[in-house]
Length: 361
Image (cartoon, rainbow, N blue to C red):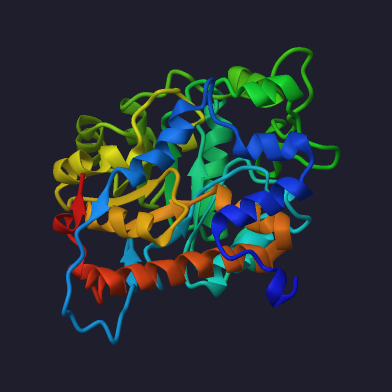
């Protein structure tokens, strides 16, 4: 893609992806649950937060470097776990891992990857975390955790907001399934690698209903911590009391997330949930956040309200669909450039100068 043809913002990448992807794939990536109210709310919530910027601050030199779980990153932006990257481009998760490393940041690899975890970590030049769904087959789940640890993943990110799959009506209409030749690679050894077409529902919804454990509860955090030495992050939290409880159960981090608006429709926007969670955690664990991040000012607001970093999912998929690894890298670079400008204009030369006083509701 020539320089003049490249999108100039994340939303233009989405439009480019829509033009290039099959409907089955695009609708899967873009959809939210039911009426998609939370999907829209994740975005609209940012517009209700204004920035009370400072003036006459020397911003001639700026830095957005930080660290997550002790791992240095070039900016407070990570790649969130999303499934099935090879529907977007042939290299799939390998392209994503390389893009993350070249951007100096962290990739969180989905359990539902189309690529083996060992291959993803081998392709990465930066840290890879592993997002985990707990299967009814606990032996298979334990094997997956141990495999991720052996491959070199740096943490386990446990998704806790999906005891069942939210109803994504676009997927029901399309009878979503993985295209021929694509599989849930990391679960093939257990025999759980196939997401097939169903007569009247999403194939992924059927997969979750039969395989994912809906009995997962707080006691299982102790079991999970007993089978790995890796730090544990709890993803899918929108309540302050749940965040505090996760820390009390040994979580090293919280991911404020409503699953991209794909689970319980009308749930709270993540940026609205963040301040109370930051207060409840009170520095005892890392706080990451995802959900609707499309501009540098969105990232600035999240850091100001208490997050260590934000995570983007769909924008990476749009980049992959538009231009493979180069597209994913450009998405990250666009957001980095926008955040840098936002920090300069807000009078914050470093992330330490971003505090809640900058944000006005």
